[in-house]
Length: 169
Image (cartoon, one colour):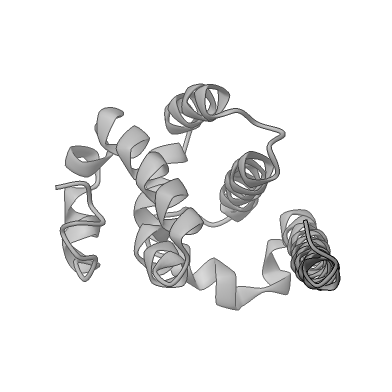
């Protein structure tokens, strides 16, 4: 190595390390923001579970399929889905555990109905995000395997704006 190339190597090393530091700092910031958003989301849902009348905007998306007083069950199911999504993304829940959890989720009382009621909105929210789309497809696969499409066919027809590729077809 010549004396002239040493400063170039040092400059290149500094540039690479600086770029890596900026990328990691940005990733850390986004993860913190997601954790804060998750906490706010959980707190809101916990409030609604304690008193379903506190948020008619959320409750209204379940009408007329959810009987009065059952909102808390569906908000609790929503919290579980968010835990699965964020836990998988953070690496706390493995892909194989996620599949087992989603299969079990769809067997819960209201699991397939909750997904049928919210899948369209969740698809719209996840469309710009690759990891969210992947999670959406996993949940939707568990939903279809549990017979959710045939059980809730009428409801799904009313919300049929999801692209066929999102529906796993």
